[in-house]
Length: 507
Image (cartoon, rainbow, N blue to C red; front, side, top):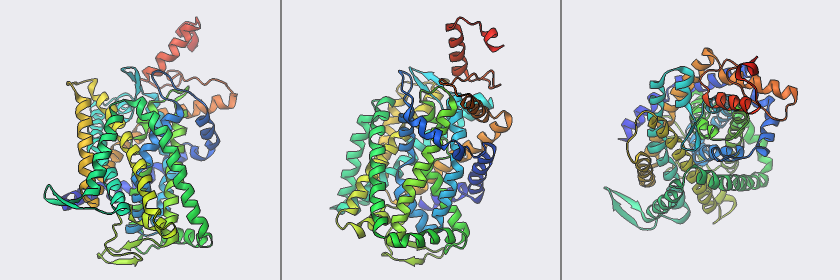
Protein backbone atom coordinates (compact mmCIF):
# COMPACT_ATOMS: atom_id res chain seq x y z
CA UNK A 1 0.00 0.00 0.00
CA UNK A 2 2.86 2.38 0.82
CA UNK A 3 4.32 2.06 -2.70
CA UNK A 4 0.93 2.68 -4.35
CA UNK A 5 0.24 5.74 -2.19
CA UNK A 6 3.77 7.10 -2.79
CA UNK A 7 3.37 6.71 -6.55
CA UNK A 8 0.02 8.53 -6.53
CA UNK A 9 1.40 11.29 -4.30
CA UNK A 10 4.40 11.71 -6.61
CA UNK A 11 2.10 12.02 -9.63
CA UNK A 12 -0.05 14.68 -8.01
CA UNK A 13 2.94 16.59 -6.63
CA UNK A 14 4.73 16.69 -9.97
CA UNK A 15 6.82 19.77 -10.88
CA UNK A 16 3.69 21.13 -12.59
CA UNK A 17 1.92 21.65 -9.25
CA UNK A 18 5.05 23.19 -7.72
CA UNK A 19 5.23 25.74 -10.53
CA UNK A 20 1.47 26.31 -10.40
CA UNK A 21 1.60 27.23 -6.69
CA UNK A 22 4.55 29.58 -7.14
CA UNK A 23 3.28 31.00 -10.43
CA UNK A 24 -0.22 31.71 -9.14
CA UNK A 25 1.19 33.41 -6.04
CA UNK A 26 3.45 35.61 -8.17
CA UNK A 27 0.62 36.42 -10.59
CA UNK A 28 -1.83 37.43 -7.84
CA UNK A 29 0.90 39.42 -6.07
CA UNK A 30 1.44 41.46 -9.24
CA UNK A 31 -2.25 42.03 -10.10
CA UNK A 32 -3.04 43.07 -6.51
CA UNK A 33 0.07 45.27 -6.50
CA UNK A 34 1.46 43.19 -3.65
CA UNK A 35 -1.52 43.64 -1.38
CA UNK A 36 0.25 41.49 1.23
CA UNK A 37 2.72 44.37 1.71
CA UNK A 38 0.63 47.47 0.98
CA UNK A 39 -2.22 46.55 3.32
CA UNK A 40 -0.20 45.06 6.19
CA UNK A 41 -1.20 47.82 8.63
CA UNK A 42 -4.86 47.36 7.68
CA UNK A 43 -4.59 43.63 8.41
CA UNK A 44 -3.51 44.44 11.98
CA UNK A 45 -6.29 47.01 12.40
CA UNK A 46 -8.96 44.56 11.25
CA UNK A 47 -7.92 42.06 13.91
CA UNK A 48 -8.76 44.61 16.62
CA UNK A 49 -12.12 45.62 15.17
CA UNK A 50 -15.29 43.77 14.29
CA UNK A 51 -17.66 41.60 16.26
CA UNK A 52 -19.69 38.46 15.78
CA UNK A 53 -23.40 37.94 15.16
CA UNK A 54 -25.92 35.16 15.54
CA UNK A 55 -25.05 33.99 12.02
CA UNK A 56 -21.34 34.78 11.83
CA UNK A 57 -18.23 34.59 13.96
CA UNK A 58 -15.92 37.54 14.60
CA UNK A 59 -12.95 38.49 12.45
CA UNK A 60 -10.55 37.29 15.13
CA UNK A 61 -12.46 34.02 15.56
CA UNK A 62 -12.32 33.45 11.80
CA UNK A 63 -8.57 34.08 11.94
CA UNK A 64 -8.28 31.61 14.84
CA UNK A 65 -10.27 28.94 12.99
CA UNK A 66 -8.18 29.35 9.83
CA UNK A 67 -4.95 29.47 11.85
CA UNK A 68 -5.99 26.29 13.64
CA UNK A 69 -6.00 24.69 10.19
CA UNK A 70 -2.73 26.32 9.12
CA UNK A 71 -0.75 26.02 12.38
CA UNK A 72 -0.42 22.31 12.98
CA UNK A 73 1.78 19.33 12.24
CA UNK A 74 3.23 21.10 9.19
CA UNK A 75 4.83 23.71 11.44
CA UNK A 76 6.71 21.15 13.52
CA UNK A 77 6.97 17.83 11.69
CA UNK A 78 6.48 19.35 8.21
CA UNK A 79 9.39 21.74 8.58
CA UNK A 80 11.55 18.86 9.80
CA UNK A 81 10.58 16.82 6.72
CA UNK A 82 11.36 19.72 4.39
CA UNK A 83 14.86 20.02 5.90
CA UNK A 84 15.36 16.27 6.12
CA UNK A 85 14.58 15.61 2.45
CA UNK A 86 15.26 18.98 0.78
CA UNK A 87 18.11 20.35 2.86
CA UNK A 88 18.22 23.69 4.74
CA UNK A 89 17.45 25.52 1.48
CA UNK A 90 13.91 24.13 1.54
CA UNK A 91 13.15 26.65 4.31
CA UNK A 92 13.86 29.50 1.87
CA UNK A 93 11.26 28.13 -0.54
CA UNK A 94 8.76 27.81 2.30
CA UNK A 95 9.27 31.55 2.87
CA UNK A 96 8.81 32.27 -0.84
CA UNK A 97 5.60 30.27 -1.10
CA UNK A 98 4.30 32.01 2.04
CA UNK A 99 5.05 35.52 0.80
CA UNK A 100 3.55 34.89 -2.64
CA UNK A 101 0.82 32.66 -1.23
CA UNK A 102 -0.47 35.50 0.95
CA UNK A 103 -1.80 37.14 -2.24
CA UNK A 104 -3.43 33.86 -3.27
CA UNK A 105 -4.96 33.61 0.21
CA UNK A 106 -6.46 37.09 -0.24
CA UNK A 107 -8.05 36.10 -3.57
CA UNK A 108 -9.61 32.83 -2.42
CA UNK A 109 -10.76 34.14 0.96
CA UNK A 110 -12.33 37.30 -0.47
CA UNK A 111 -14.28 35.11 -2.90
CA UNK A 112 -15.32 32.88 0.00
CA UNK A 113 -16.94 35.97 1.55
CA UNK A 114 -18.40 37.33 -1.70
CA UNK A 115 -20.30 34.13 -2.51
CA UNK A 116 -21.23 32.97 1.00
CA UNK A 117 -24.73 31.85 1.97
CA UNK A 118 -26.79 31.51 5.14
CA UNK A 119 -27.38 27.84 5.97
CA UNK A 120 -29.43 26.83 9.01
CA UNK A 121 -28.63 30.07 10.80
CA UNK A 122 -24.90 30.31 10.06
CA UNK A 123 -22.72 31.56 7.24
CA UNK A 124 -21.31 28.99 4.82
CA UNK A 125 -18.93 29.45 1.92
CA UNK A 126 -15.81 28.16 0.23
CA UNK A 127 -14.48 27.04 -3.16
CA UNK A 128 -17.45 24.80 -3.94
CA UNK A 129 -19.76 27.81 -3.57
CA UNK A 130 -17.70 30.16 -5.72
CA UNK A 131 -17.03 27.44 -8.29
CA UNK A 132 -20.79 27.26 -8.80
CA UNK A 133 -21.63 30.96 -8.59
CA UNK A 134 -18.64 32.65 -10.21
CA UNK A 135 -17.77 29.92 -12.70
CA UNK A 136 -21.35 28.79 -13.34
CA UNK A 137 -20.31 25.15 -13.03
CA UNK A 138 -22.25 23.38 -10.28
CA UNK A 139 -20.75 20.01 -11.18
CA UNK A 140 -17.29 21.42 -10.54
CA UNK A 141 -18.43 22.67 -7.16
CA UNK A 142 -19.60 19.15 -6.39
CA UNK A 143 -16.29 17.71 -7.57
CA UNK A 144 -14.36 19.97 -5.19
CA UNK A 145 -16.79 19.28 -2.34
CA UNK A 146 -16.45 15.50 -2.71
CA UNK A 147 -12.64 15.57 -2.90
CA UNK A 148 -12.46 18.00 0.02
CA UNK A 149 -14.63 15.83 2.26
CA UNK A 150 -12.39 12.88 1.43
CA UNK A 151 -9.22 14.93 2.01
CA UNK A 152 -10.03 16.81 5.21
CA UNK A 153 -12.51 14.29 6.58
CA UNK A 154 -10.52 11.10 5.99
CA UNK A 155 -6.94 11.64 4.77
CA UNK A 156 -5.53 14.71 6.52
CA UNK A 157 -6.74 14.06 10.10
CA UNK A 158 -4.56 10.94 10.15
CA UNK A 159 -1.42 13.07 9.57
CA UNK A 160 -2.18 15.26 12.58
CA UNK A 161 -3.11 12.31 14.79
CA UNK A 162 -0.01 10.38 13.74
CA UNK A 163 2.25 13.30 14.67
CA UNK A 164 0.58 13.64 18.07
CA UNK A 165 1.03 9.94 18.81
CA UNK A 166 4.66 9.91 17.63
CA UNK A 167 5.49 13.00 19.71
CA UNK A 168 3.93 11.40 22.78
CA UNK A 169 5.97 8.24 22.19
CA UNK A 170 9.23 10.21 21.89
CA UNK A 171 8.39 12.24 25.02
CA UNK A 172 7.09 9.49 27.30
CA UNK A 173 8.43 6.27 25.80
CA UNK A 174 6.49 3.55 23.98
CA UNK A 175 5.36 1.59 27.03
CA UNK A 176 4.23 -1.94 26.22
CA UNK A 177 3.76 -3.23 22.67
CA UNK A 178 0.38 -4.70 21.74
CA UNK A 179 -0.50 -6.65 18.60
CA UNK A 180 -3.26 -4.74 16.83
CA UNK A 181 -4.50 -5.40 13.29
CA UNK A 182 -1.38 -7.39 12.44
CA UNK A 183 1.18 -4.89 13.70
CA UNK A 184 2.69 -3.94 17.04
CA UNK A 185 1.41 -0.71 18.56
CA UNK A 186 2.69 0.95 21.71
CA UNK A 187 0.35 1.57 24.62
CA UNK A 188 1.42 5.24 24.53
CA UNK A 189 0.00 5.59 21.02
CA UNK A 190 -3.21 3.78 21.98
CA UNK A 191 -3.76 5.98 25.03
CA UNK A 192 -3.05 9.11 22.97
CA UNK A 193 -5.44 7.97 20.22
CA UNK A 194 -8.21 7.19 22.67
CA UNK A 195 -7.86 10.50 24.52
CA UNK A 196 -7.86 12.55 21.33
CA UNK A 197 -10.96 10.80 19.97
CA UNK A 198 -12.95 11.40 23.17
CA UNK A 199 -11.88 15.06 23.49
CA UNK A 200 -12.40 15.75 19.79
CA UNK A 201 -15.86 14.18 19.75
CA UNK A 202 -16.99 16.39 22.63
CA UNK A 203 -16.16 19.51 20.62
CA UNK A 204 -17.18 18.68 17.04
CA UNK A 205 -20.65 17.63 18.17
CA UNK A 206 -21.04 21.19 19.50
CA UNK A 207 -20.93 23.03 16.15
CA UNK A 208 -18.90 25.88 14.66
CA UNK A 209 -19.46 28.27 17.59
CA UNK A 210 -17.85 25.80 20.00
CA UNK A 211 -15.00 25.17 17.54
CA UNK A 212 -14.39 28.94 17.17
CA UNK A 213 -14.58 29.51 20.92
CA UNK A 214 -12.02 26.79 21.63
CA UNK A 215 -9.57 27.76 18.89
CA UNK A 216 -9.59 31.51 19.65
CA UNK A 217 -8.18 30.72 23.11
CA UNK A 218 -5.86 27.78 22.43
CA UNK A 219 -4.24 28.73 19.10
CA UNK A 220 -2.88 32.18 20.06
CA UNK A 221 -1.69 30.95 23.46
CA UNK A 222 0.20 27.93 22.10
CA UNK A 223 1.62 29.82 19.12
CA UNK A 224 3.00 32.59 21.34
CA UNK A 225 4.38 30.09 23.90
CA UNK A 226 6.04 28.06 21.15
CA UNK A 227 7.65 31.09 19.52
CA UNK A 228 8.86 32.44 22.88
CA UNK A 229 10.61 29.16 23.62
CA UNK A 230 12.11 29.21 20.13
CA UNK A 231 13.41 32.73 20.75
CA UNK A 232 15.10 31.50 23.92
CA UNK A 233 16.84 28.72 21.96
CA UNK A 234 17.87 31.15 19.22
CA UNK A 235 18.98 33.74 21.79
CA UNK A 236 21.24 31.21 23.50
CA UNK A 237 22.92 30.59 20.13
CA UNK A 238 22.60 34.09 18.71
CA UNK A 239 26.12 34.18 17.33
CA UNK A 240 25.29 31.33 14.97
CA UNK A 241 22.12 32.92 13.58
CA UNK A 242 23.74 34.89 10.69
CA UNK A 243 25.46 31.71 9.53
CA UNK A 244 22.17 29.78 9.64
CA UNK A 245 20.38 32.45 7.58
CA UNK A 246 23.24 32.39 5.06
CA UNK A 247 23.05 28.57 4.92
CA UNK A 248 19.30 28.68 4.20
CA UNK A 249 19.65 31.23 1.40
CA UNK A 250 22.73 29.77 -0.30
CA UNK A 251 21.47 26.20 -0.01
CA UNK A 252 18.21 27.22 -1.69
CA UNK A 253 20.07 27.60 -5.00
CA UNK A 254 22.98 25.20 -4.61
CA UNK A 255 21.51 22.76 -2.09
CA UNK A 256 23.08 19.49 -1.08
CA UNK A 257 19.94 17.60 -2.09
CA UNK A 258 19.62 19.31 -5.47
CA UNK A 259 17.67 22.43 -6.46
CA UNK A 260 14.63 20.37 -7.41
CA UNK A 261 14.46 18.67 -4.03
CA UNK A 262 14.77 21.94 -2.10
CA UNK A 263 12.08 23.67 -4.16
CA UNK A 264 9.83 20.63 -4.24
CA UNK A 265 9.94 19.93 -0.51
CA UNK A 266 9.83 23.62 0.38
CA UNK A 267 6.74 24.28 -1.72
CA UNK A 268 5.03 21.00 -0.77
CA UNK A 269 5.47 21.51 2.96
CA UNK A 270 4.87 25.26 2.60
CA UNK A 271 1.48 24.69 0.97
CA UNK A 272 0.66 21.93 3.46
CA UNK A 273 1.46 24.26 6.33
CA UNK A 274 0.03 27.64 5.28
CA UNK A 275 -2.71 26.19 3.00
CA UNK A 276 -2.53 29.19 0.64
CA UNK A 277 -4.28 28.15 -2.56
CA UNK A 278 -5.37 24.83 -1.11
CA UNK A 279 -8.94 26.09 -0.67
CA UNK A 280 -9.41 25.40 3.04
CA UNK A 281 -8.96 29.01 4.26
CA UNK A 282 -12.03 30.41 2.43
CA UNK A 283 -14.34 28.24 4.54
CA UNK A 284 -13.37 30.01 7.77
CA UNK A 285 -13.26 33.36 5.95
CA UNK A 286 -16.85 32.94 4.78
CA UNK A 287 -18.05 32.29 8.35
CA UNK A 288 -17.00 35.76 9.56
CA UNK A 289 -19.28 38.73 10.12
CA UNK A 290 -17.67 41.63 8.21
CA UNK A 291 -18.67 44.86 6.52
CA UNK A 292 -16.82 44.10 3.28
CA UNK A 293 -15.51 40.84 1.71
CA UNK A 294 -12.02 42.29 1.20
CA UNK A 295 -11.58 42.53 4.96
CA UNK A 296 -11.51 38.76 5.42
CA UNK A 297 -9.26 38.44 2.38
CA UNK A 298 -6.74 40.68 4.11
CA UNK A 299 -7.03 38.91 7.46
CA UNK A 300 -6.51 35.51 5.86
CA UNK A 301 -3.47 36.83 3.98
CA UNK A 302 -2.03 37.83 7.36
CA UNK A 303 -2.67 34.33 8.72
CA UNK A 304 -0.23 32.96 6.11
CA UNK A 305 2.46 35.21 7.57
CA UNK A 306 1.73 34.01 11.09
CA UNK A 307 1.91 30.39 10.02
CA UNK A 308 5.04 30.28 7.90
CA UNK A 309 7.11 33.38 8.49
CA UNK A 310 6.64 33.17 12.27
CA UNK A 311 5.88 29.64 13.49
CA UNK A 312 7.58 27.62 10.72
CA UNK A 313 10.64 29.88 10.87
CA UNK A 314 10.84 29.36 14.63
CA UNK A 315 10.95 25.60 14.09
CA UNK A 316 13.50 25.82 11.29
CA UNK A 317 15.88 28.04 13.25
CA UNK A 318 15.67 25.76 16.30
CA UNK A 319 16.48 22.67 14.25
CA UNK A 320 19.29 24.22 12.24
CA UNK A 321 20.90 26.24 15.01
CA UNK A 322 21.19 23.17 17.25
CA UNK A 323 22.20 20.86 14.37
CA UNK A 324 19.40 18.43 15.25
CA UNK A 325 18.74 17.13 11.72
CA UNK A 326 19.79 14.73 9.00
CA UNK A 327 19.55 15.33 5.25
CA UNK A 328 18.60 12.26 3.21
CA UNK A 329 20.17 11.76 -0.21
CA UNK A 330 18.41 10.37 -3.25
CA UNK A 331 20.33 7.09 -3.06
CA UNK A 332 18.98 6.22 0.38
CA UNK A 333 22.08 7.45 2.21
CA UNK A 334 22.70 10.69 4.08
CA UNK A 335 24.13 13.96 2.80
CA UNK A 336 24.28 15.19 6.40
CA UNK A 337 23.92 12.94 9.43
CA UNK A 338 23.87 14.57 12.86
CA UNK A 339 21.37 12.15 14.42
CA UNK A 340 20.86 8.41 14.54
CA UNK A 341 19.93 6.88 11.17
CA UNK A 342 16.58 5.61 12.45
CA UNK A 343 15.42 9.14 13.41
CA UNK A 344 12.35 9.74 11.25
CA UNK A 345 12.34 13.00 9.27
CA UNK A 346 8.56 12.71 8.73
CA UNK A 347 7.95 13.21 12.45
CA UNK A 348 8.41 15.79 15.22
CA UNK A 349 11.68 14.11 16.29
CA UNK A 350 14.05 16.79 14.88
CA UNK A 351 12.16 19.54 16.71
CA UNK A 352 11.96 17.57 19.94
CA UNK A 353 15.67 16.80 19.88
CA UNK A 354 16.52 20.43 19.13
CA UNK A 355 14.65 21.59 22.23
CA UNK A 356 15.90 18.67 24.30
CA UNK A 357 19.50 19.70 23.57
CA UNK A 358 18.82 23.04 25.24
CA UNK A 359 16.20 22.03 27.83
CA UNK A 360 16.99 18.45 28.93
CA UNK A 361 13.97 16.43 30.09
CA UNK A 362 11.66 19.32 29.18
CA UNK A 363 12.06 19.92 25.44
CA UNK A 364 10.53 16.66 24.23
CA UNK A 365 7.53 17.00 26.53
CA UNK A 366 6.91 20.64 25.55
CA UNK A 367 6.96 19.81 21.83
CA UNK A 368 4.59 16.91 22.44
CA UNK A 369 2.23 19.26 24.30
CA UNK A 370 2.51 22.02 21.68
CA UNK A 371 2.00 19.56 18.87
CA UNK A 372 -1.03 18.09 20.64
CA UNK A 373 -2.80 21.45 20.71
CA UNK A 374 -1.63 22.52 17.24
CA UNK A 375 -2.67 19.23 15.66
CA UNK A 376 -5.87 18.96 17.67
CA UNK A 377 -7.10 22.39 16.60
CA UNK A 378 -6.10 21.58 13.02
CA UNK A 379 -8.34 18.52 13.10
CA UNK A 380 -11.15 20.77 14.37
CA UNK A 381 -10.60 23.07 11.39
CA UNK A 382 -10.58 20.06 9.05
CA UNK A 383 -13.92 18.95 10.46
CA UNK A 384 -15.42 22.40 9.92
CA UNK A 385 -14.22 22.45 6.29
CA UNK A 386 -15.66 18.95 5.72
CA UNK A 387 -18.96 19.94 7.35
CA UNK A 388 -19.24 23.02 5.13
CA UNK A 389 -18.79 20.93 1.99
CA UNK A 390 -21.34 18.39 3.20
CA UNK A 391 -23.70 21.35 3.70
CA UNK A 392 -22.97 22.43 0.11
CA UNK A 393 -23.87 19.00 -1.24
CA UNK A 394 -26.93 18.88 1.01
CA UNK A 395 -28.42 21.75 -1.00
CA UNK A 396 -28.94 19.21 -3.81
CA UNK A 397 -28.94 15.79 -2.15
CA UNK A 398 -29.60 14.81 1.44
CA UNK A 399 -29.79 11.65 3.49
CA UNK A 400 -30.54 11.33 7.21
CA UNK A 401 -27.57 11.61 9.56
CA UNK A 402 -24.93 12.70 7.02
CA UNK A 403 -23.12 14.95 9.51
CA UNK A 404 -23.19 12.29 12.21
CA UNK A 405 -21.66 9.83 9.74
CA UNK A 406 -18.96 12.39 8.87
CA UNK A 407 -18.09 12.86 12.56
CA UNK A 408 -17.88 9.11 13.19
CA UNK A 409 -15.69 8.53 10.11
CA UNK A 410 -13.36 11.40 11.03
CA UNK A 411 -12.98 10.11 14.59
CA UNK A 412 -12.25 6.64 13.19
CA UNK A 413 -9.54 8.01 10.88
CA UNK A 414 -7.99 9.94 13.78
CA UNK A 415 -7.67 6.69 15.72
CA UNK A 416 -6.35 4.81 12.66
CA UNK A 417 -3.84 7.55 11.81
CA UNK A 418 -2.48 7.50 15.36
CA UNK A 419 -1.28 3.91 15.06
CA UNK A 420 -0.07 3.88 11.43
CA UNK A 421 3.44 4.66 10.17
CA UNK A 422 4.38 8.30 9.65
CA UNK A 423 5.36 7.81 5.98
CA UNK A 424 1.96 6.36 5.07
CA UNK A 425 0.07 9.06 6.96
CA UNK A 426 2.03 11.87 5.30
CA UNK A 427 1.70 10.35 1.81
CA UNK A 428 -2.09 10.10 2.20
CA UNK A 429 -2.19 13.67 3.48
CA UNK A 430 -0.13 14.92 0.54
CA UNK A 431 -2.64 13.37 -1.85
CA UNK A 432 -5.49 15.23 -0.15
CA UNK A 433 -3.67 18.58 -0.16
CA UNK A 434 -2.47 18.16 -3.74
CA UNK A 435 -5.88 17.39 -5.24
CA UNK A 436 -7.49 20.36 -3.45
CA UNK A 437 -4.69 22.68 -4.59
CA UNK A 438 -4.94 21.56 -8.23
CA UNK A 439 -8.69 22.14 -8.35
CA UNK A 440 -8.73 25.42 -6.43
CA UNK A 441 -5.76 27.23 -7.96
CA UNK A 442 -6.74 26.44 -11.54
CA UNK A 443 -10.30 27.66 -10.98
CA UNK A 444 -9.43 30.90 -9.15
CA UNK A 445 -7.15 31.74 -12.08
CA UNK A 446 -10.00 31.06 -14.52
CA UNK A 447 -12.42 33.15 -12.40
CA UNK A 448 -9.94 36.03 -12.43
CA UNK A 449 -9.96 36.15 -16.23
CA UNK A 450 -13.74 35.76 -16.34
CA UNK A 451 -14.40 38.79 -14.15
CA UNK A 452 -12.02 38.98 -11.22
CA UNK A 453 -14.52 39.51 -8.37
CA UNK A 454 -11.84 39.50 -5.67
CA UNK A 455 -9.84 42.20 -7.50
CA UNK A 456 -12.99 44.30 -7.93
CA UNK A 457 -13.70 43.93 -4.22
CA UNK A 458 -10.15 45.04 -3.37
CA UNK A 459 -10.36 48.13 -5.56
CA UNK A 460 -13.74 49.03 -4.05
CA UNK A 461 -12.37 48.61 -0.53
CA UNK A 462 -9.31 50.72 -1.25
CA UNK A 463 -11.52 53.40 -2.84
CA UNK A 464 -13.53 53.62 0.38
CA UNK A 465 -10.29 53.62 2.39
CA UNK A 466 -9.10 56.65 0.44
CA UNK A 467 -12.40 58.42 1.17
CA UNK A 468 -11.95 57.75 4.89
CA UNK A 469 -15.35 56.11 5.38
CA UNK A 470 -16.32 54.93 8.87
CA UNK A 471 -18.59 52.07 7.79
CA UNK A 472 -17.72 50.08 4.69
CA UNK A 473 -20.37 48.84 2.26
CA UNK A 474 -20.27 46.33 -0.56
CA UNK A 475 -22.63 46.49 -3.53
CA UNK A 476 -21.82 43.56 -5.86
CA UNK A 477 -24.17 44.63 -8.65
CA UNK A 478 -22.63 48.09 -8.80
CA UNK A 479 -19.23 46.38 -9.24
CA UNK A 480 -20.54 44.01 -11.90
CA UNK A 481 -20.32 40.94 -9.66
CA UNK A 482 -23.20 38.57 -10.29
CA UNK A 483 -24.69 35.84 -8.07
CA UNK A 484 -23.38 37.37 -4.83
CA UNK A 485 -26.88 36.90 -3.42
CA UNK A 486 -26.09 37.42 0.26
CA UNK A 487 -24.45 40.81 -0.28
CA UNK A 488 -27.05 41.91 -2.85
CA UNK A 489 -29.86 41.14 -0.42
CA UNK A 490 -28.04 42.91 2.42
CA UNK A 491 -27.51 45.97 0.24
CA UNK A 492 -31.12 46.00 -0.95
CA UNK A 493 -32.31 45.59 2.63
CA UNK A 494 -30.25 48.58 3.68
CA UNK A 495 -31.72 50.71 0.90
CA UNK A 496 -35.28 49.73 1.75
CA UNK A 497 -34.63 50.35 5.44
CA UNK A 498 -33.52 53.86 4.56
CA UNK A 499 -36.65 54.37 2.44
CA UNK A 500 -34.74 54.53 -0.85
CA UNK A 501 -36.08 52.66 -3.91
CA UNK A 502 -33.61 50.10 -5.28
CA UNK A 503 -33.28 51.56 -8.77
CA UNK A 504 -32.98 55.12 -7.45
CA UNK A 505 -30.19 54.08 -5.02
CA UNK A 506 -28.22 52.49 -7.83
CA UNK A 507 -28.54 55.64 -9.93
